[in-house]
Length: 228
Image 1 (cartoon, rainbow, N blue to C red):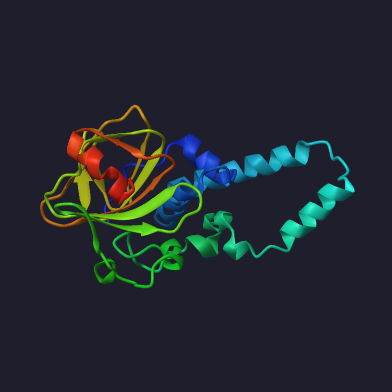
Image 2 (cartoon, helix red, strand yellow):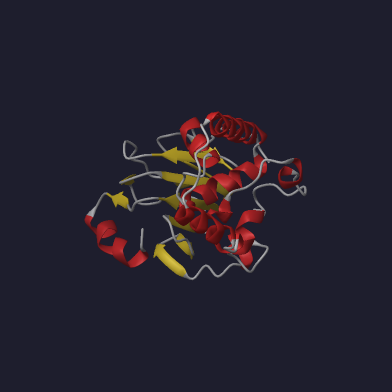
């Protein structure tokens, strides 16, 4: 595994630490944290800061209605909650099994039935050389993308935020060169066209809180079909 050069920005990591990041984006951050000790430190610092702010608040008694609501939430099975994508920064959670980002991250095991990227059902073709697998997410949008070696994605910008983590291979675009473990943290100001490395398919995990904005009539025509 090469050294991770691109990380989520600090605002994204603080939002993740506060539990305020949409689930589709939080899944990408959680996967990145499995491999990035630098970002785990930032998230832990944000959690400590948030805990300190909570302690500093003046306590206020709950009304009977609010107390009942809290007790009801405590009874909810947290494993079914969209916030279950949060990954702890503790030692047990961040210990790696020896697999680099070319292996399926632990957090994705709840969505996928296979342990290998090549065994996944890459059935939906978006464009020549570009396939995707949609993952179920009730807040935002998250998908696996497979760009064939040497192929290009359509030129696009963003109507909101996009986080993309490279899981295998790599790509280059106007932002830079991204390899396994790297995360592209992009917003509406960025227009780019990722091009996969020539020697290997590029597999990415992409989370978005709004649809992409494609350039070109053909890409815009198929956008509703592929759900991007």
